[in-house]
Length: 249
Image (cartoon, rainbow, N blue to C red; front, side, top):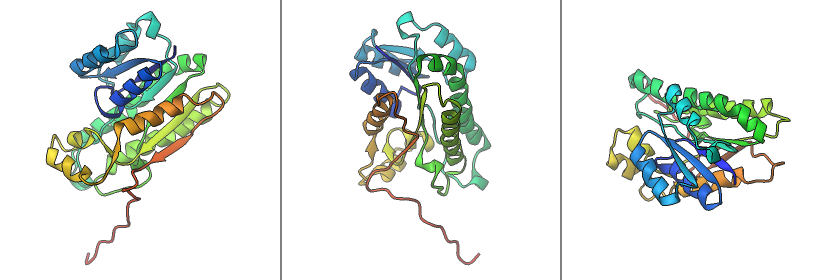
């Protein structure tokens, strides 16, 4: 039985990934800050197939302690799903909070590369897989996307760099780049504004967390000689960002 480590498993895509991988016969280590949500997932999926690792991905000491405490049956990680991440704020750069920018960089970039670096030796040994959750924001800029888009562009390029360095090791690396997915993403981004979330997703028939989780599982279970380098997904209702034209200035 293979084991996947999924960061940000307390909601959205990460939670859906945990369910999808367990349903496919994997063991899953789910990480996150909200112990009560991980405990509920453990009760649902079973302690023999789901292990809750409660820590903030930005806290390297807590992360290392949690990894060191993994039960023996969960210790061999075959797939790392770097899902934990967030967007904060929709303001233009000149009005944005520097603290929000730093939090996005610390979570979406620094924590991701730190955990990846930590697990690389084991993943090489097991000829495992790394699936990084980027975004269409890595490619298509939009007003208010500023640092969030920058962090996801980093994830895209970091994935390609890993792929280059890991050639010949048997380790597969994929950047999954979704467009609109209805999760808690917009609630987090707007500080809990349910109306903003409803307005964004209402009538749009967006993708679901389960859609992306199924894609992640598909990538992770492909034959060992196949690698999906980058995979961009959008709901049919969404298209690329349009050009902006400011007039009279």
